[in-house]
Length: 131
Ligand SMILES: [Zn+2]
Image 1: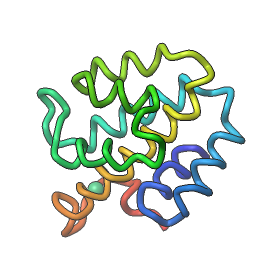
Image 2 (image 1 turned 120 degrees about the horizontal axis):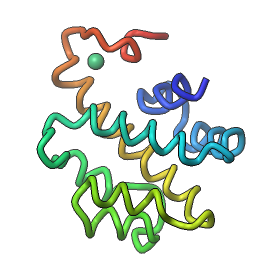
Image 3 (image 1 turned 180 degrees about the vertical axis):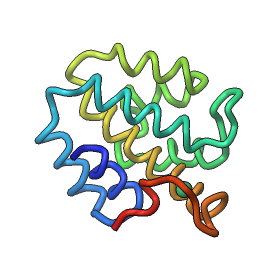
Image 4 (image 1 turned 180 degrees about the horizontal axis):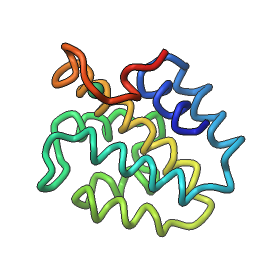
């Protein structure tokens, strides 16, 4: 299950490199689906629902394990969150792996932040309560 895999990566229950490669190898044909899912997850995990920006989000972009000059990162750094995500959706196939890695990384960071703050004393998110 891809949802399960994404959340295991986010919660560091599976190595980022191994987890992201598994997604890229096994689900490469579902780019738009995975992207839509990651987008939802990221929006949900950012407390600021006005412009979906936060210090954690910005730090996450700066630590994505790709070249900081790669197209998805430049887009993420240049545009507000929602506009950037729409632009990522429209990138050519050759950029899709980088887009997935970027968004997986961002979600790992923003979700970890949420786990350590609002979810610290337990929560109802079912994905935070699985083994
Ligand atoms: Zn939670």
